[in-house]
Length: 161
Image (cartoon, rainbow, N blue to C red; front, top):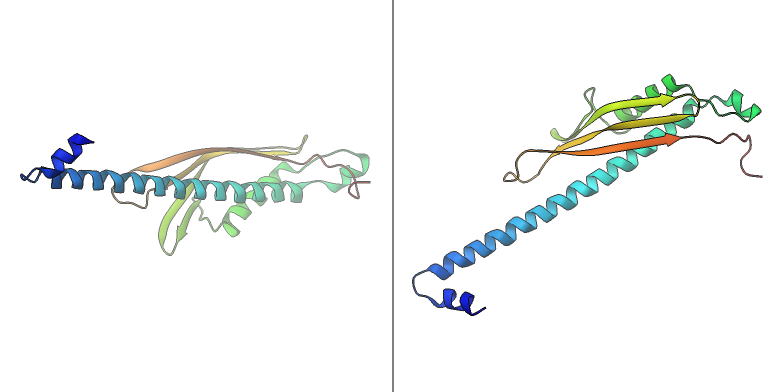
């Protein structure tokens, strides 16, 4: 603490430079924390919306005629089609799975694998969320990985007894 006070008391202007350096460091750390929070919030929101779309795709693709026999089976092709339909219609992604807001690119989904199985009924997606920082001095793209699974094993006809 004595060193800081002695630097600030000098008449040569070293104290002013020191203050500017401290302010720069504080502002940079603040921007990084804001950006981390923004990306984390966006990641959680997209994770939630993707899970919701996967769940509804699996539910839509369930073959009800098998439930009578207490057997869970799904049309995997239909589930994949419904998921992509959900991505384009509900999430408003373009053909390349890019999201735009007010003409500005926000993020893109990079799907590495989309696997659907009929028996057991399960939809698995693995990929990355690709985005950029909103601050110009934090350059480059960030890729956040995700792996999601949705399944349906409900085989009763009328819910819980």
